[in-house]
Image 1 (cartoon, rainbow, N blue to C red):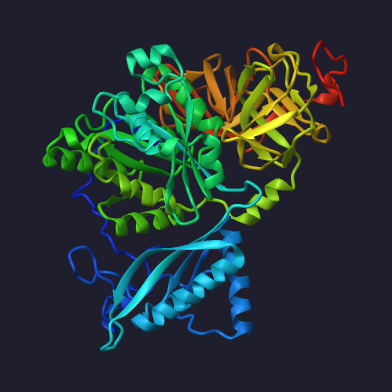
Image 2 (image 1 turned 90 degrees about the vertical axis):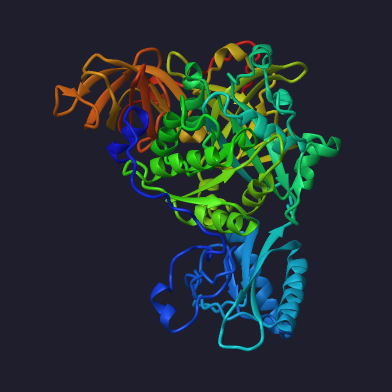
Length: 607
């Protein structure tokens, strides 16, 4: 990570010239074909009616979930079966989602089809989808100019498979932003299906504590779900649906992780970003206050942890158009400065939202910006279109590789539920976890692992028999003694022989420190779901560090050993001091040295 990210934590923002505005109708995936514009006219039409699309899309990739088809008119039975097999592959690559570009050659040339050919092609595509148990939704149509007197179009179609065996596509989106920027209200409006009254009514269902309702400020991490069915329609709590009904009706689920905006709850926000492994982050900025408070810090955290983020400017109903434009330009300046190096893309139409979703997943530098109101509902639909089309970051092959590893579940939350017993919440990092499975949990304060049994599993508030790598869930552990558990533990397969450590080394960048960073300095270290104070034992090759400098540093946990992995992202803080890096070496204490806990206390379950 570039040390210039430190500008987002403690430095000033420097203007970098005129603001860039993303235009609707740009080809998904961007790029390609600029030099060929002399030979052919540019195809497609933007909002203003001018042709501004490149004549080519990027060439079709063999991997991924995007398929180009010139036309699908009356295929033979053999050809039809081949097309169906191809669709199954694309759906598998996109974990249940695929995008078909009809009227495009394999090399990306936008040829287009006449109306009759397009109608026949869509009919064939619908038959193919029915064969594999999927639904299709037309995302957009665009006219192209391809040396023809007859109007020709290309059509972009989303194919989504109806979920089977509860395996709907689940994306986690962390919600960041300054206090009072409208994060919880926006989530309330999206998930409840009702607009806010301007005084925070929409956010009341999201709060977990009385003091949050009284102050109107989120202090803990809460989860909200928004579903999309196979036709791309929103499924939320409107029409008196329960969470279980939303899960049953949805083929794609967005899980929002609502984080705290106030600076005194920063450790909670960092824990949410590091332990819950969000796929994306949504940075909410209030249009009337602009970049204030913790906004810059939250932006820096997302960049330091390499979480792709998009920006939502809220409360546009309270401001004049000039104020909103000023906030947009302020954001664009920060995004384009060297520490960020992002390309802002202002979304003002459905066409922009489709383009933004596809480019955002393909290029880490694209940052979509939405302007909306939770009171008037202005542009809310654009965010829904964007979330509906947003593809997963991992493909099916990476998912399969993770599932073949041994089971590892991160413990992020611990509850006691009446008539159920001890329940832990967290994310399955690798492997598969089934009901009735025997695992070991640890490390305890003395570095041991305890045996336990998974009694039942719930995912998105509905029962689930099998949990797969990358999914978040709660596991019921029956009468297991809650006092033996803490956040930061892991539940792993007994065959793993997990290694733990109290001393480890990390290659770090000191993002901000008021003076010099020396041996003996204490910091709070965040590595995944681990959060503990550590002391600096040694700085290799140097006596001290200043802001922006890199070094390999040896840390020692002051309380108890933790389960860490080499290569894990690390973030540390103490007051205004902040730094990032990754774990490079562990001084491991193996469970053979420390022993697996054999003596089972009251309520503990053995194999």
